[in-house]
Image 1 (cartoon, one colour):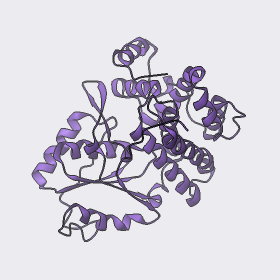
Image 2 (image 1 turned 90 degrees about the vertical axis):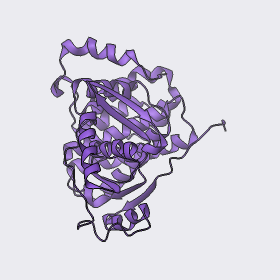
Image 3 (image 1 turned 180 degrees about the vertical axis):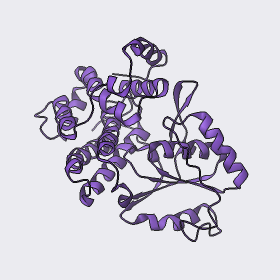
Length: 318
C-alpha cells in the first residue's frame, strides 16, 4: 500500500430521520447554560432570510450587523449551500458556535472551506475554524426538495468526489469515501426523479452527499471547481446547474492523465462498461438535466473573459 496522509475534519454529525428534534440538545453543547428549550421560542434572538448564492460579502455584512444588534450567542443555518455558506462566513467573523442543518446535497456543511464573492470575483479560503461545529442531517427535510434541484444538487456532490479521486492530495481513505458517495448518489438520484417521496432513496442520497462533502473538505479540487467558481462568482450562474453542465467536460479533459481515477469512477457508475465518462453521461440522461450554459444565461461573448479569470489564479490540475 502506498504511504499517505489523511486529516479528518472534526465536525460532529447527527444523521437520520427526525433528527431535527435533537437541535435543542446539540445547541446546548455551545454553552453550559441551556440555550434552547425548543426549536422556536424566546431563545431565538433573530432570523435572517437573505442568504444569497455565492455568498456575497455585502449580504454577510448585513447579517453581521443583525447578529451584533441581537446579542446572539450561536448561529443556526438551515437550508442549502448558500445558507450554510452564510453561516460559515458569520461564524468565522464572530467566533460563534455554528450548528447547520442542510436541506440539499451541496456538502458545504462538512468542509472548512468558505467561498465568497466580492466585486464580481469569487474567492475561496480554508481554515479549520470555518468548519461548522455540528451538522444535523434530517432526511425528512429533503423530502420536498424539487426533482430538478434534487438532480443538480446531487450532481454537485458527485463533482466533489470526482475531483477528489484525481486530486494532488488524494489518498486511499478519501478514495473510499469518493467511490461510496458516488455509488450512493448514482443509484438513488434516478429513483428520486420518478419517486421523489422515496424515503430510502432520499436517505441514500443524503448519505452520499455527506461522503462527497467530506471529500471536498479533505483534499484540493481542480479545474472543474475552478471553472464553476468563475462562472458562478463572475457571471452569477446558478451553482449546482453549472456543476452539472461542466463536469462531463472537465472529466473528459482530464481523463488521459488520470487512468486510475477513471477506473475507480467507472466501477461505481452503472452502465459505464469501464468508461467513466460514458457512465456519467448515462446518469445525466436518466436525470434529464440541462446540458447547456447558454440556457443558464451564459453569453458567448463572455467566454474569453471567463477563461481569463479562471487562469489568472488557477487551481492545480493533472
